[in-house]
Length: 377
Image (cartoon, rainbow, N blue to C red; front, side, top):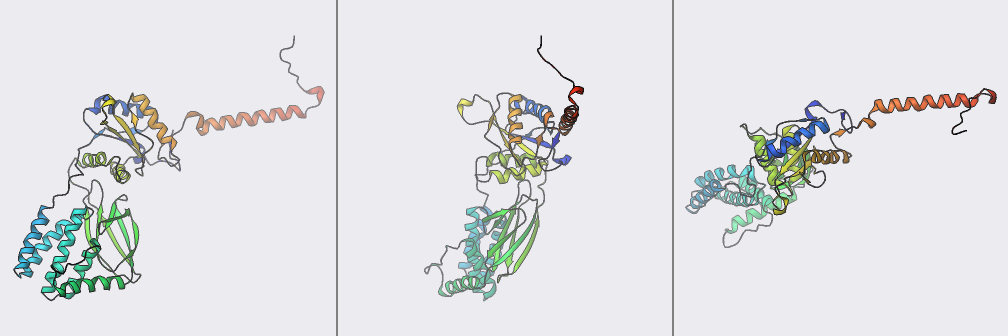
């Protein structure tokens, strides 16, 4: 019998999903493991999901933003501030959804600083201050150089930053979907799911919401400051195409053993609608003799124990079962026959009946008691 540790399990979550790093592992390892898991854990195990590898180490293509920034710089040098602003809008739009990346964040700050200078040239002091403040939030360590910025621009930048600091911090309540979505403010990770963020200086901040298998959402949020609570909601749209789960699994394989492993694993578990995740991957070590390893993740994306060498499907299924049973908050618990309530009910009835008979016999007079003698000649 399968039960939750804290209540009955919904049917949609009563299964384990398999993620396989390479297609050649499916027939030799994944399918036999799935069969063993069905027999051992009595869970629904779907067809193994073969990962499409995505190179997360490769920086996002920033060529569009770089070209637009270069065109804006040339236009500004020729005192064409309006044309520069048009190019800067293109650059900003292409960078808004990738602010979690350091290079994109640095480039976006450069765009905003140039936009502020162009707005000053057009005598738009308010928009210029907003651009300077946004750039400061992205790169607080930046200081305008005297040989590159005119005095009025340096003064406007310093005044905008000082005004933001004097305004008093505010807070932001963020509601997101899916529940495992990862949140970044001005490029800094602030958490996952619907949360509240405190101590935000007043002004425009860049919010990024992202999740594996969904379109990322980038927005500029105006924080009021002075202790006020601001709210924002973002519900991500699923990526189009038939391969989004395989693409998501590829992201998970790339994130293994990294700082984002648990976050990505939780997102993939939610995406495939499972209670637990088993990832089969071919080890890089030469002494592994080709046997893959299995990693087990719970519904929160937490890795359960050390990797399991796939010596045989039955042994791996038993090890996976022990991983799930060993967690006090495990989503799945396979209850053995001697732990099921009917067994304990029968055992309890036998004990009670025996106690009643024994008490009845002890209350009888001595001449009415039944005497049992064992081993007497």
